[in-house]
Structure formats: C-alpha cells, structure tokens
Image (cartoon, rainbow, N blue to C red; front, side, top):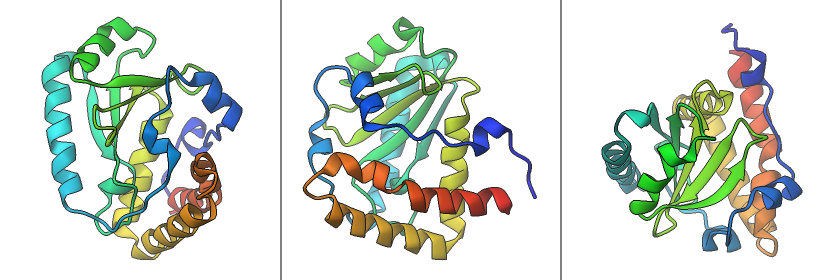
Amino acid sequence: MAEYPQDVVQRFHATPEQVDAGLVGEPPRTWASIVIEEYDPAWAQRFAAVRTSIVEALGDVALGVEHVGSTAVPGLAAKPIIDVDLTVEDTATEPAYLPALERLGYRLVLREPWWHGHRMLVGPAEDVNLHVWPQGAPEPVRHRLFRDWLRSHPDDRERYAETKRRLARDTAHRPRDYSLAKNDVIDEIYARVFAA
C-alpha cells in the first residue's frame, strides 16, 4: 500500500459560502447549468493546445501543466470543460502569472487563499477551467491520483459517470449544488485509491 502525506489523503470540502467569498467578478456562465456529454477525444487535443499556449505565455513560471478532471479520462462522460492544473511557485504572487494569462483571454473568477492558495481562471470561451496552485500544494496530487485511477478502473469510471448524470438531473434547478453533491462518490473512490 502506498503511503501518502496526510494533506493529500485529507480532502478539503468547500462550502457554498466559501465559494461565494472567493468569487472575483461575475461567475462563469457555465455555472448556470450542468450538461454532461459522452467522452470526446477532441478534449485531449483541446488540452494540448491550451497547454502549449500557457507554457509559451509563462515560460519557466509554469512549473507544471496537467490535464485533470473528467475530460482527462478517456471514456468518461463529462461537462465539456477542460480542467487544467497549473503549478507556479507562489499563487499569491499574481503579477508573475496573471497578466500573461489575461493577455491570452483568461479571466480570474476565484481567489481562495484558504484552499492551498487556489486561484481559478476561465478561458475566453469558458470551455477551460484553469486551476492555479502553488508548488507543493496537495490538491494537484489528488487530482492526478483520481484521474489515473479512473483511467485504469472501469467500474469506478462508470460509477462516477452514472453519478454525474443523475446529479446533473437532480440539481438542474440548482446547478451550483452539483459539485458539492459529487463529494460522497468522490470520497468513496479516493478511499479505494488510498487503500490500494
């Protein structure tokens, strides 16, 4: 069994109030409804283009750029939004990365210093959620573990897809509840990841 640091094993659950407190400007329009689509191989190509543009814009400031979330798992139904984890030295030093990303059309929508310094930007078409983390943050480690587990465990991949479809229907009248509603199944899957 692999040993993981406690801050990787212990997952943070944000409350709606915390999300609201971290909001910068207008929320993305994609938060207004949840649409789950069948897996599209073009998502990997979209990430490759996003990664290239970020690396070109930030150079050595970009310590890591990873495709995470459901669109990074072949065969998994997902919202058609590419989740990207960008690691920089320190997210609090926004002048080091934010202006270059804004020139690419990204817009800062969340600033959450209480959650490992997390920042979230959306791309110009709002089809990319760019999560910015400081070096050493545990959340990107969890994202990669979850992604890689779902890539190699079809039963959990299908369980997660079915849960997402059901919750998208169940939260249609309150779409901001969708992400929080997934916590139980995500925690169940993480329990298997950390026990393996």
